[in-house]
Image 1: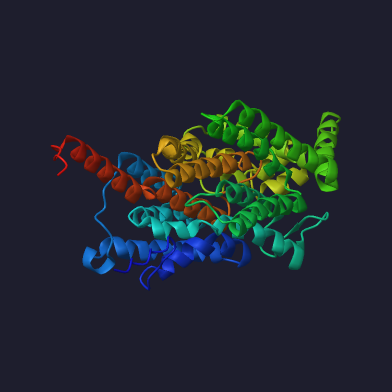
Image 2: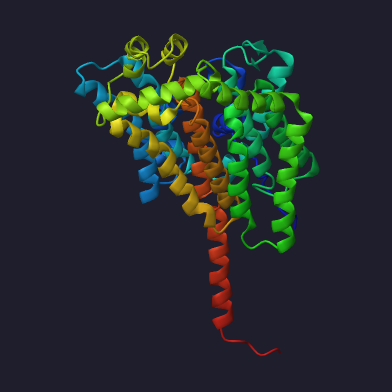
Length: 446
């Protein structure tokens, strides 16, 4: 009797072709095609809502089983939208354009609810997505870069800071995806390791030094989480390897040395009265933001309030004309941006999109099967990195970056929740069968 062929872990039928393609290509498409990140997120939300509203006989999806943490994730993703809406209503002027970006957080909720009901073989199509995005980021800078001034290279539509930050975190997720769903073959391992170095290289080329602060923090967190239960040799050699990589980057990369040197120079110049450096402008804007929060703590100034207050700060001498001009673009800190425009309520709302998914991932680090716990580690890493990015730049002022953050969170949250559900159920059934066999009466050998 012939043995049935084993189903591939990446098998896909015509019904699942579209979501599989989305999971594989979304990060790369965001970096490669102008507007793709936003357009794909909207399309994914609309399709997901249609699937959630359709009967099971049409979709083939199992019934939705709510988990309290999952509900909290959906609520957290809705918080920025309602905080911005509340701020507009309270000030008597709802600025429609300010609702666009926060609505992209909201759009991730239906995608998450659909993906968490999918089978692992569909979710596994995200396996190479981050490696491909890391490689894509470097490819763009090598083949079709745009010079944004001062030798800062990026894509034609995304500024060097955001591009470098995304490339960096894609490289980190690429290496964390090693042996994510199965033991990777040599070729796949090479691609994922290459994705790490491509993402780091792209970040260095852009000169996005604000994102580099995330490297030691993320490395320390991963070391702590991955070292539990490991041998003493592992706990010694891995930190040394990370330190060696960081030192090597500084020693052999003129870009890294120059950007670190610029930071030191900016600080010295600021103390001597030259405030119009990259660091000095940020410090001026932070002081202005702190004054706004102190005077309008609950609901802030309303939509575009920080931007509209720049001229008055310049007139009072608190900001230099250069800082005021750049402040009309952004506050260069994500939390302060929301707090100046929408007060403490806005600050809590944007904090929710970090803390609630982070708590979900932290809780699922102890998932019984490897794919789910690895997805949780990747999700936690992604959130911590984006939070650090937001200390020096507004990460959520662009629709593209909001969509990217929300979609990746939805994908990794679904994987951490249900990537191992079949494996767990099979293991559970196996244990029940073993117990039943052990308790059954033994038949003497004839």
